[in-house]
Length: 174
Image 1 (cartoon, rainbow, N blue to C red):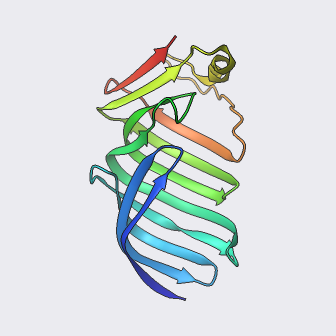
Image 2 (cartoon, helix red, strand yellow; image 1 turned 120 degrees about the vertical axis):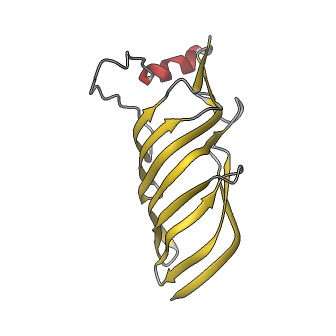
């Protein structure tokens, strides 16, 4: 048990190809790493606050309970067409994200508003993949709907509340 000061800390979310850095104190217990209001910076030095803990059982059975909040114009996506064949691009957003669960079954809840500089590409050219994009729908934002779409992603449950506004470009590639 104790406190560790991490200097020049960093991590990359491989699926999103985004890199973040931080420097702060982390509480270490027998079965967890805990942090409170840790400032995490994207590659453009924009700040977010992270709270939560990562738990384990003798360095096995890993689980997370993390909230990242108070970010504005934060880089959340940096992929190209070789990284992901369903969607790719650059994404900047304002909002919050929470992640909870064991590492094989994570639930993510996101409240995000798109920011200027966002460009998301959705290729619809390959018939094998175009059927996977049936969850993409467009609606008139003056009409309210509570329609839920289910997409099977093994080990990941997403609850996304997205405000994709005129600052973002979504390119459908036929």
